[in-house]
Image (tube, protein in one colour):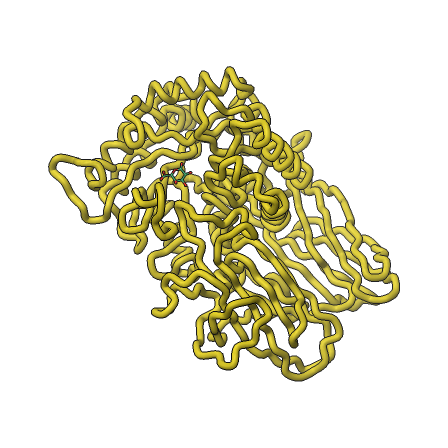
Length: 572
Ligand code: ADA
């Protein structure tokens, strides 16, 4: 399943799921004498008994049949972490980073049988600046779906839709990119439609072998807003037509909602919100990073059952099916690019800037139509305390602004009063672990943090505690409530939540670290402190079994805030 709805009704598309041949190899391009294994796609090789800890290159291979001469487009939703794709022996794509999609286009493919070879590499080294030894695991293989499409010469490449609320009316700002593979210029009719609302038609001329972008803004007086209580979604349907013949289409789902930080508050549709959320790694004890749809759905149901109204996609862009579920359920998303805890030295890896900017750009371009996403963030706990680090934060935050001016931007820092980038963000976010890594009082620390924000360029901006938490090993109980026990995790989370959700709290949001336990890189150095090679701060374990703290958090998140109570009173 690629998305929760059909992305094309006219363009032929099918998912290349199922068993592919598999063989570990030593280098990209190598053709082994035998393919000894068969692995499921999507999937990661760690779920095979022989490859539970394999780090290296794996070759996936299969054939496809085409019935007529056509152009083909392959879309890989996520290959971990480096992909090289060969079609009939010729390299057609190279992509770095596990968590964003990429395409391969093959022109004038003859009818018959064709071979696809996908080399996936999950090894660490200088060539990989973002996937490094870390407090989560880099799995190997095509962890997300692969789609095969037949495309005409002129086809829709991408469509962005930005809702805006101006002078009491919802408007939609469209950007539709159309590509022409033909050797001569073409003129086609472009139709921009939104479920039951006014449609737009426009003639576009696209030069030979290039792309053209059409921009239009349209008022939608009858639009219903998307909000958590009623997440109204509209089907966006873009079509290409020539002489009454509709020959290509592109379907997505959008919602009308605005986000701003006026008056130092985080506001959605003009109303202040308090984000009550969890950090979620896309990691499962059995599936690794290759979630089945029911596993994704279970996660969102558990998150909603906890009383959360938000989720942070720590520390990388998520599977779009998960974002689709958030759109449908009215769960706000903080989505961030891929990075965790990189030092200045790691950020000076010659590949870092290119790779980090690519994932930032791809995240925004691929996910900006999701109404659930209300915050874009970058570079969790990287070097926002050094002048070189600042140059990176500055350029990536500006890049986001250039691709989407409608959402506030943030980054989660642990540099406290040493951070020198707070002025660059729209929302100030601190990762603090009082009562776990330090013995500070959560309430005092929160007020101190507000002071750092005010002094260091964050005055007048909303503030979020983007991480706090405590490890607990599932099933480890202790009457003495020692660290690592489920009881102690309850105590620590309770003390934190009591302070952060109090009536006088200056916060616009809290995100517990973390939703579920996750696997970490094979322990060396500081990672040796991770018992069982896992980060065990989950409210549920890797199999989604709730720990005691699940109920503690649910009681706090489901309790009504003073503001919610007074709104209810006013309504009554
Ligand atoms: C950090 C980091 C998380 C995780 C957490 C922890 O704040 O952002 O990825 O490593 O600490 O458990 O210590």
